[in-house]
Length: 454
Image (cartoon, rainbow, N blue to C red; front, side):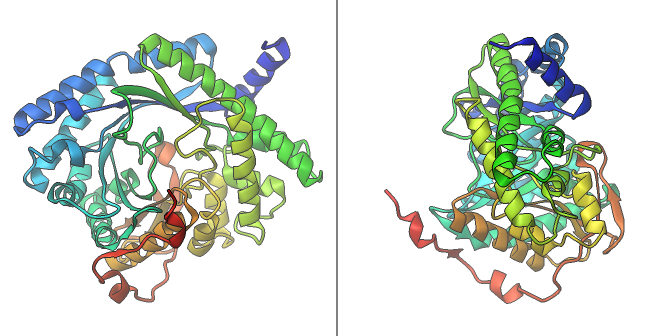
């Protein structure tokens, strides 16, 4: 039973500590839209999305009003478009028409992002998958709400280095194509290792082929709530610290569970998973970095940062899984630089470097996220950074990702403004030594020995 104290406590979390449901994401399978004729395919995709998702935004707003719980985003994810377009798309330009159709459908139903302009190529690429990847720069330049992701590695398959090399070039080209918007296209492009089928968070969401025809996935967030709770136990033991994080994560997750069940019931679409990630925003007091500082660091990036983040991530998961039977997606702590005021401050203070962020990704949910780098960074250097992050995911049997933004025309120390939840960021320095001969080798890095489990 929920008592009056818990109602007041939840209200306080919402009003004072930036608690929100970050997204309701409706996953839609487009497999039944597959057609050899490009015009018919585009028509089927548009009709399927606008029919299944027609009530999504209105339902989310109704739940917000009735429960006074902020639901920041309503989003859609679809089956990886490389699969859906393979039969009809003979060139990258053909795939761009599908991106434009996704964008029109997203605008029609009122969602802020649609994910799934994606390819899963951890072991190799078909011609259609390569065409989609090569179409990404133009697709992201010509659309507003489309998000793209490419999975280039997994613990079972190893790392497709041909795809890693290509993605370095694609990120550079995407930056060039959107340079008038400070290379904003790259903020909607993620490179994954071990990408989950049910992630509700953008830009990496797609509707996996193992999923039902339609599914509701919800992502919750509450860095400000966790920070506020920890401020009450300063100086206490690690046991008290861990218990506090677990209890807080449980409460945050219960709010998300309520919203997920209501959305599922009202839309008549099955509830999939609850992603209990701590996703920060640029708002003051809504920062993962500030949680780490509350734990006892002068700045994020100081010695002890990776240990503090490992503790936080583990306790969030332990508390969250007790609050929902269907926890999935990424679930943990995000460390995007531009979307977290504390991370931005740590970079500007010289406490946080690209190399330290890479170390932190060994123990958190995702990876090198929303990091602005100099616009003249070579494609091969970007590929090398991707390869490093994919190796962390592959060896540690976890999801890792890279969302780098080489901002054309800007260099180290300058600032770039992306706006909204994407925030702003200082341009971070990148190691200038070359890895070109390494990334230009063809083939793939084999799966690690511990992948052979059956």
